[in-house]
Length: 543
Image (tube, rainbow, N blue to C red; front, side, top):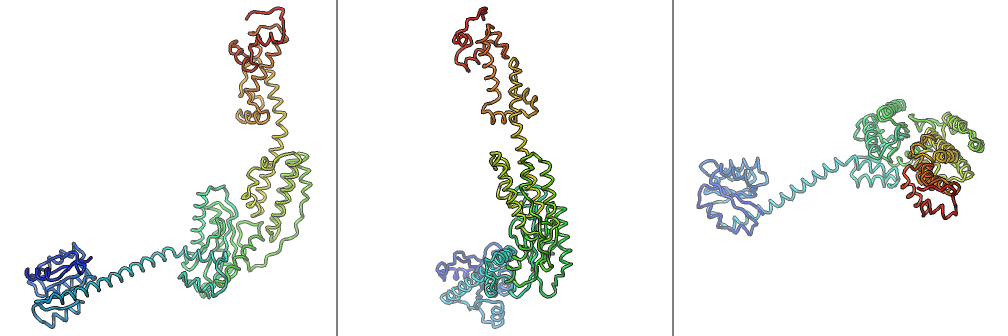
């Protein structure tokens, strides 16, 4: 719908225009009236006027002046001039200001209707152009805002080979995604690998640290260059893509220093071990193979942390490593030489750190042999591996173990400590239980508490309860009651002691309570039990 403004100082002329055309047929829903320029300006301030029909000659200012004002502030409004005089100067000025038409009074309403119809059509075109322009601006803004995400997604697709490495295919993808990258441009890839964190991080902290690492890389490696891109491969692997075209020569020593500063900053502020792997320059379609080369470079150097590696530098292949005879370590475990195996394993793995070009296969082979040795030992002991090693057997932990020599050392130490602790626990279980049983027997005449027993065997009361229940299937309280009742039954059968004296002998000062406990366990009271065993006590005392 549209809004119309009629401006004329002659009231009858205004009414004639209002009545002379079927405005509703032209989709004009509101008709506003002004008799001078000031009133017209006020209406423009309150309503969105689409079409203005205006007299040129008015006492307080001409229609030409009003249209000039409208053009500055309301450019989408279309205007039609009415006048009593055929003045060429007015007509010229009206057309220069973009008026739809210049019509003489008295106006023919069918002609006015035609001109207004033309104005409506012109407004529709303007509105469509305006909407299209706004949409274009919006999508341009949206693209600019999301450009880093689109760029990162492109490089991810290239390195994961979701986009073919064919140069023509690369060009087509760049064009379809409207990315400002030339397929003929060279780039330098630098892989950033987070080897480990000083502390275990929860998922929230990991996201925060990842954000911090990215910001630091953007500042220290990419230097905020809008043509560079940091690409996330996983939570611990990122690839910096740096333009390497004219004027952007990347000298090895410069890149080494840049990466060193980044590594030192990450060590200091984010408390993590991190290494950088600098690849060779290449075109866009060569980046997938460049990235694969960096992965192999990483997997061939697992004995160094916080280091800058260059693909272009000759890397020595792994020197020969003496394969440890696992049966020697097995004998240490079997003989209880626990300190010796901890020391020997640390010494042996430390030797890996001196090997050049240590590959992942070496660590994986060692881990498999070590696990086989532990499994054999546990099978001999009739233990379940998951009970001994717990979370160390989780897939995530095993994958982490072969990321570097340092990670493998930490895992081996943890696995050995778990195994050794289980050895101590299993060997001591019988001794601890015997001490508990002996203590209870020696103190049946007393009210024995869990805390008393825990102090005697130097264990925490809660741990004592769990361990005793696990080994015997009974709680400590249940066992004490059973022992007291067993002693009472023996005294009832073999002595002529009164029931009250027997109650005192087994630690019950309250005779009624003793009788109740006895009956719960034996299903008869003490006197009934004595009679059932046929005992005729010589000096039977009343109770």
